[in-house]
Length: 270
View 1 (cartoon, rainbow, N blue to C red):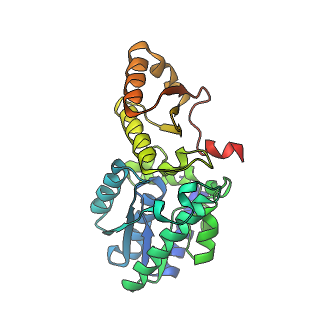
View 2: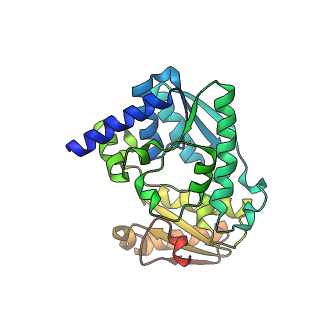
View 3: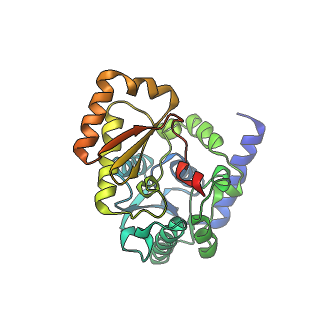
């Protein structure tokens, strides 16, 4: 591990010590799992509460990972109900959709912190997230939510490297974004559409594809997978299975994006 990365770790610990008892916005992903582990190691399990939202935007497979990781770390874990489709304007899928979602979520986490007499709410953004279109950052700033990994200058690569050294199984976990990110801006987000996307992605993951996005265009599915896995999907038997299953789910047209997976591809039109 480089001296630069060691310095970042020390800076992160200093930040935790300055904020005291914390609520961690915890999805079970690479970044929030690392954030939770470092908070626990620095502050002690009794001073950390992981909070995960039960939401139609997050698949059960992700929730199960969050539960497992919190249990293994010995950290208290609270689930809160969240239905973003009930937020005024959210289902219309405007370009600031993420702001509406994050504002609602972090409002609830602040309430949890107040109820539990915890001093701060922290979340797991990294420097890489600062480069992409992330309207949710506005909500984080407005509500005074802390982003310790950004403050300590952690990149996603840094997080994965230190996670691996800590033995966290999430160190090589594929990145995940909420299911709303599968819908092109301006196309209505519906419960039925979310279920269809979730079922399609579950199926593809079950076939062994490591990173999967099924972009939803009403009756058309645009599949994104790693470039090195494209040949596997185009294999006759696998391709036929995918077409058959996605048509059964409700898609009329099934397409494969030849550019392969890239995070935030829906933002390319902005």
